Image (cartoon, rainbow, N blue to C red):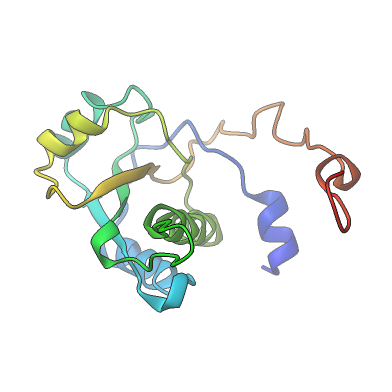
Length: 173
């Protein structure tokens, strides 16, 4: 699939079949996400893969947005491993992890699987449930699986602002 088709056809999957996702399939997705660009190539993104019913039950206690997926990937940032902008000390970890998460999301769709970016979760509950080290910041949760037969994009999926509405040339003044 070419990139233009990929970004237009990808949609948030919120209904999954019971068909499992194999370890090999998940590893292939992570291999694709590994090539995401990061500031100074420091690669502060970290992934936690959840693939058992027990882990998915624990995840459901941290967010109601698991959509009964058979697996999930939690994308985290490790600020101590990230580049820091010298002008204002802005740490790039969350941005870098978000770039990697976007690559992961697109790789998932390209593989015929489905997901949605979940930002509505309890970070403290995630930290406790999955023993996240103190230095990791959870950024996004991706419920992962094969889309259910009746799954289709939300009616809002195609509603996008025009380029003119979101773009300024030379200055925002």
